[in-house]
Structures are given as C-alpha cells and as structure tokens.
Amino acid sequence: MDQTFFLAANSGRGFYSLYDGFPDEAQFLHIIKGGPGTGKSGFMRRLREAAQARGLDTVSVLCSGDPDSLDALSVPALGLAWVDGTAPHVREPRYFGVDADYVNLGRFCRLPLNGDDRLRAAALNRAYKERYDAAYQFLAAAEALERAEELPDAAVMREETERARALLDAFPERAGSCRRERRFLSAISCKGLLSLSETVNLLCKQIYCLRGGGAVLESAAAYAAGKCTRMILCPSPLNPRQLEAVLIPELSLAFVAAPAALPIPQGERLQSREALSRAVGELADAKRLHDRLEALYRPYMDFEALTAWTEDCVSALFDK
Image: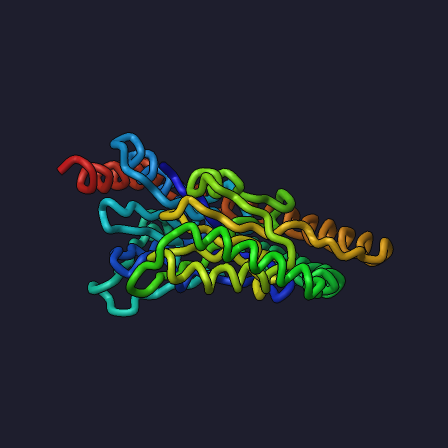
C-alpha cells in the first residue's frame, strides 16, 4: 500500500510548508542534498520501487510545484524516511546521527559549471523564482475573493457538528493521547488543482461530507481525539488556515468539506477563477524554466556512478 500526500502548498500566503512534521518521530530521516537535476526524485522512486516489490508499505510525498516529482518517502517497516532537503523546504537534522543524516547526491555532479553555464544557471534560477512570486500574487488575490465561503450559517454549523459527533459516538472512548499529523490532500500546481482522493479511499471506507467549512471539521477533529490514537488533518492548499479533510484511518472514517453553500456574487467567482487560472499559468512557466535548469546540469552528472551507488543502497536496505 502506498499512501500519497503533499507536504507543501502554493497558497494564498505563499509557499506553505508542513515538512517539519515529517516523518514520524520513530523514523530515522535521510536528508537528500543536491542541485537541480542531480537525481533526488529518481533515487527515492527507486527505493519506493524496491520496497513495494518486497511487499512493504510506503508513504509518498509529491512535489506541490511538480506533482510528477517525489519530494519525500517513508518506509515505516524499516523505520526510515528520505526527504529532499533543498530550498524551498530546506531541512536539517535536529541531532545529526541521532534523528537524521545527509545523503549528498551533489558528489555525482562535476563542478563547478563552466563560465557560460554559470551565467545561464543564475539567469534560470532568477527567472523561475520570479514566476513563483507572480503565482503567489494571483493566489493571494484568489484567496481574498473566496473568503466569503468561510462564513457559513450558524444553524448549519450546529447541525453538521452534531451530525459528526453522532457518527463518532458509534466508537468507544480511548485512553491516551491522539497524534495529529498534518498533510495536504490537494495542491495548486503547474497542472492545475490536483486532489489525491485515492488516498482518502485507501485509508477510509466511510467518507462523510460536512457543510460548514473548516470550523466544523476542526470541531469534529477535536471530538474524534478521544476516539483514536492518530488522525490526519488536511488543510486547504489555497487557505491553509482552514481544514478540507480529517482522516481517521484506525476508524476507517473520514470527514471532508462539502462545497460552500453560500452564494458568491458571480463577478467575484469569475475573478477568483481567473486569478487561480493565472496562478496555474505562472506555475507552469516556472516548471518549464526549472526543467531547463535541470537539463543544464545533466551533462555534468555521472549517472552511471549514481545508478551503481543507488543499487548498492537498495541491496544494503532490502537484501540483508
């Protein structure tokens, strides 16, 4: 089984990261360092392939900017996780060698770049970051236009809160604390708005849509804390202050936000959609520029050595 999430969002508040909450504290984290095009995602994909071939469950974290790229991986049975620790989600060990260490893929890259390529790399870095800045301006505008959806009717909120509690009352109270993990189930990306609905279906058989917005989901999560040992709280990518889902795998139960029932003036809705569309366009431009940046580095990479080293890692992890 592979659970798939995002750990960051391109949001109305800019780049919003949940990477500090990954992985589980019991897992040792390998922080991968390396420049564009040095094979960070490919390395994790090979590890995931090897784990799944041996029947081990995995947790995959997709890049919110480029969902075809893998930004983190966890193999719970091994007590191990890997993460791309480069900007914008820079990660460092809390206690080196105790909870985390480094994996340096940059050592397979022949550096420094030659003179012309240095200039090209600097220009492409600036250009794709400018596209992200533009995208965040459009996302901020879209989020501001949709704030009206955060003001549900009080009677609806009471009704839906009571409904969620009634559903949870079917489960007994549990002693001890409840671990709350925060993960994104959707992302605003270069491919548009993507939702990982298959993850909800994989973890939860009973899925209920609740009206009333994030406040009702927060209330449901607070009440559910006495019924389970773990839950996954999923913020909205556009406005991470608001939840869009609460997953409770051990109860096979999920609450997801229903579409807002409040009418939004047609003009504002069109403006919001236009702002989101413009943001996606900027993210797509940023992806194309970043692809060119990765291509610039590839001739400097010793992929044969990287592949051989990766297979040694696979053997050391899985063929003991």
